[in-house]
Image (cartoon, rainbow, N blue to C red):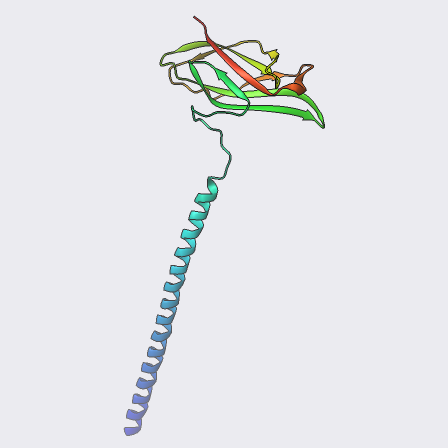
Length: 171
């Protein structure tokens, strides 16, 4: 009987030791997991901020109505230039054409019907080419979504320095 009691106590003690060891291992794993969760959260926040900051580095078309665009002058009180880009296109070393892209925004406070011409100038402000006029209807406050394009590919295309977009109201 005493032997059975001793065996019983040894088994009970061994089970307690195994349970305690198991609990210690369990708590170590939980502690390790909590530590990993903290590190993961910190890493996630860092990656999120990195993506946010780097996400702003993409080139986007501007819709700022007060923007100025290099080598493009708008002559109008009715509209603002929402976007403008003057491109000099070359075939190897020879200039083949000058191309201007632009978007207009109506700031007149009313619906307007416009006649738009694009004039290409050299550095001495000599007129090289005047595009045929284009008629555009703009409702009040409207900003164009499709880009307007004017191209010059004449004899003096290599001399193009800047353009003027001339806007007149059709009454």
